[in-house]
Every structure is written in structure tokens, then in C-alpha cells.
Image 1: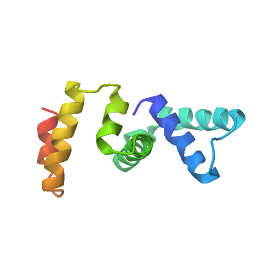
Image 2 (image 1 turned 90 degrees about the horizontal axis):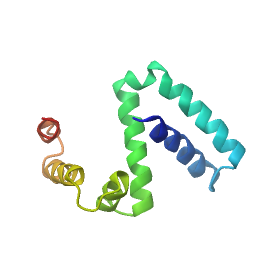
Image 3 (image 1 turned 90 degrees about the vertical axis):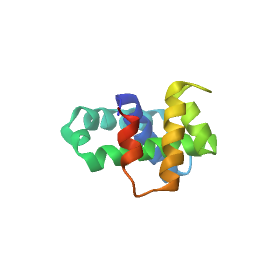
Length: 108
């Protein structure tokens, strides 16, 4: 997770909790908290890292209103290689959600 992605998660959490965008002062505070979390050992914890990554992707899904659209926005691509790999992996995981093999194959 990049620092910017962690900051986006913190801001999006607040937005969902408040029901509207946080103020500039709130955003500044949230970004400071996210920067501290990013610099800490928290992100080396698998559960924390996966949880933040999942929240980050949920932000993009909510923004795009589809998984395909979310991956495209996430990478800023419409037909990039990264998107194609993620889409193929997602399709395989849909067919067999308990298998870790598609994830292993993707990172080779």
C-alpha cells in the first residue's frame, strides 16, 4: 500500500461515517493519521495490509460502480496489461473462490 492509498482509505472511512466529505481540517488530520500508520509496522501485518487494500479497492468499486471499472480507475488504464492480469485472476477466483492458485500464478 502506498502512503496515498492509505490516506485515501482513512478519508473514505470518514466520508462514509460522516455521510459527506470531511472538511479540509478533518482531511488534514486524517492524512496525518494515515501517514503515521503507513510509516509504522502495521502494514507488515498481513491482515491489516489486506484489510486496507480491500477498503481501497472498495473505494474504487463504489466510485466506478463496477469491479471492471474500479480496476480501470485504479490503474488509470482502459486496456493495460495490469488490468488484463487482474481481470483474468478475478475471473478464475470467481470460478473457484477457495483456490489461491490464480493469485500465485498472477505474481510469477
